[in-house]
Amino acid sequence: MSRRRKIYEGKAKIMYEGPEPGTLIQSFKDDATAFNNEKKGTITGKGVLNNRISEFLMTRLNDIGIPTHFIRRLNMREQLVRQVEIIPIEVVIRNVAAGSIAKRFGIEEGTPLPRAIIEYYYKSDELGDPMISEDHITAFGWAGVQDLDDMVALSLRVNDFLIGMFLGVGLRLVDFKLEFGRVYSEDDMQIVLADEISPDNCRLWDTKTNEKLDKDRFRRDLGGVKEAYQEVARRLGVLPEAGPMDLKGPQGIQ
Ligand code: ADP
Ligand code: UDP
Image 1 (tube, rainbow, N blue to C red):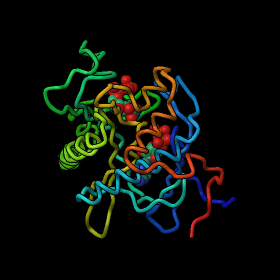
Image 2 (spheres, rainbow, N blue to C red):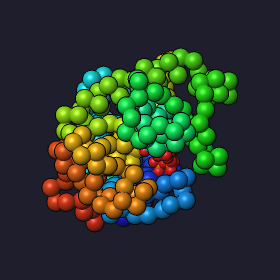
Image 3 (cartoon, helix red, strand yellow):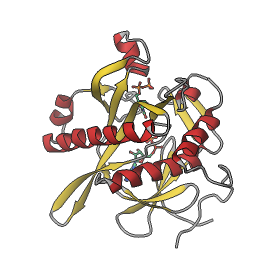
Image 4 (cartoon, helix red, strand yellow):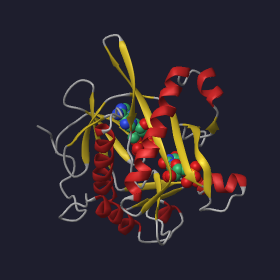
């Protein structure tokens, strides 16, 4: 086993120091949590699947000019990414009412929203990720007005693109969460998409049957969690051929 410096261990991923300055290795775990850590579990193979799914989606987004942290996949569980200064905000984009918005406003789950709705949550496990407004973000200095403008514009582009991409494989993108970070160069700063895009942070429903193919299967004890993630990977054409088995553990990189 290689001895790499662990920068951070979160609920779903471990970030290691990368091979070059300004890079990190993002390692996807099989651990799953929900309801601010109250519910914990393991979904065997989830890390391998999310690594592939996020690689695929970030690559497609890069292709259409959305700046992302993704550099390349290294192995079954790990990808090389640009180290960013994470903006401590979860940007949630919703197309269809589900989860907390359905509860908060008493809207039936599955009701299409009049237009894409963006919400912000402050990233803080201690505080339970409270919902915040644009004013909180700028007043408390978590992001500037221009940063926020960039994040909104990028979120809406990502949403439009992903809606179409998932529709093409028979999936409805109900809602999802994005994280952004800052990358600095010489005298410039750019906002880039970071973290991951996977069934851990998207709601994806089969367009014909409305079957849930995302983390709600875990949150709501619906069973077939791994199979749902596999189905998303299969439809996107990224299901690992040998199956979602990764017995190698973290590997050194060239
Ligand atoms: P959590 O922190 O919510 O438990 P994870 O287990 O997914 O989440 O941990 C990944 C952590 O790494 C998150 O806090 C995320 O904000 C952060 N992160 C994601 N991408 C990058 C990046 N490119 N550079 C620095 N930090 C990142
Ligand atoms: N989400 C996420 N991380 C969070 C909270 C939400 O990835 O900490 C995603 C979630 O998977 C869903 C969307 O954001 O796709 C909206 O989630 P919601 O606010 O409904 O929260 P929930 O009730 O699911 O916790």
